[in-house]
Length: 207
Image 1 (cartoon, rainbow, N blue to C red):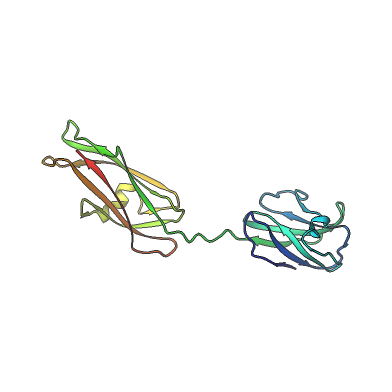
Image 2 (tube, one colour):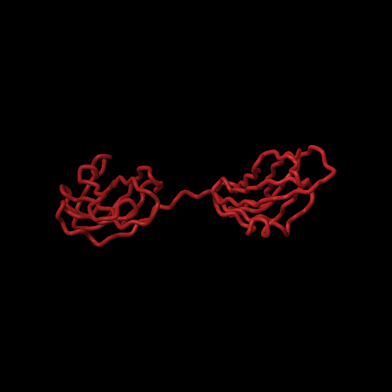
């Protein structure tokens, strides 16, 4: 039986207690197999390390096993000495920390300002990118104050941005009687962490 003595945090040292039987107080070792420890014997906590942090080893208990492992599921064994017969494996999972970030969509333009071309129109690229590692479902898009909600999927091939995903679209804006002005693109949506009614925007200068 494996009991955490402190919160298992990926890539930070924590401690567990192992209860069982047949442990040799002078030679018992703990062997870990899992992410970063693919083969038996890659990751071994020696008998000395088991006693380093005020730990004790008896025939039925290893009181303080120091572990520094990444997130994932592991098999943990005990053996007496390097050549001892390993115990039956006990599964142990270290969960990745919860991502409670709020989804963020960065809106950028290329170029950041654009002059009227010879055909009288403005040509540029709009890129939207999720930057906080949280998936976002887009529900609204306004351009210059006008709603284009139904155009999100046609423009960007989806209404969803996965974590860190970016999507781009080439745009032609027609405004024959316009002088220099800033055109705002504004997006609204909800993220995978149940944050709703989020909004993100940026403006491009047309000149």
